[in-house]
Image 1 (cartoon, helix red, strand yellow):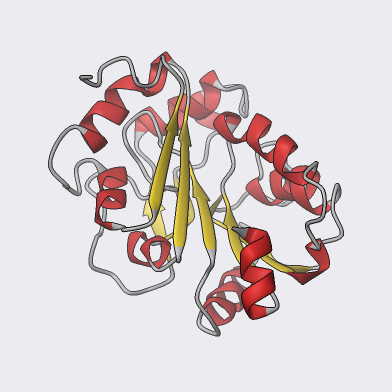
Image 2 (image 1 turned 120 degrees about the vertical axis):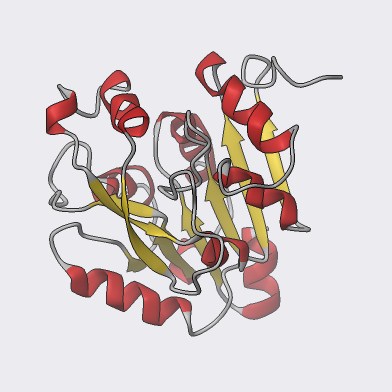
Length: 220
């Protein structure tokens, strides 16, 4: 899809996700041959409010280490939790042209990016500030991004649900037993702000990739 966008439009505009579920995927992605990364425009989904880019849990740092450094991508609009101008700059860049491909995951509580339940399905703002639930904050500790719950910020900047759905195509990855309940709530039930990632059901070109553990509660 990245190669196709470059072939058709000269550039590929992509939104990257972060987290444990994305690590193997991104390692394989940047190793793909014949992707002209200098023609890719890169955004990402979210960032903790108040966390600088050099913090080990920073999404900015995650994207730098896993995409920017291994490739020749130079056109980046990365969020900095300590500099609101980066959000303004990224929002303006999103307004220039549609995103070709967005990568996402699913939180243990069903969040999409950091759109926590009940998510705002109506805002047209490209990025919003949200309060993080305790479940989401605990997930960050369990995944070893922070040492304790007290260390996890209570707010984050996130790409809004409507902005994510504006992408031409969406690729969502969820792995592991801890995601099974969220997958069931989001994809074996009705679309609801209580299950934010269920919004992906509204997108005609969204593809969900699960391992057997994440899919364990889905019926055949």
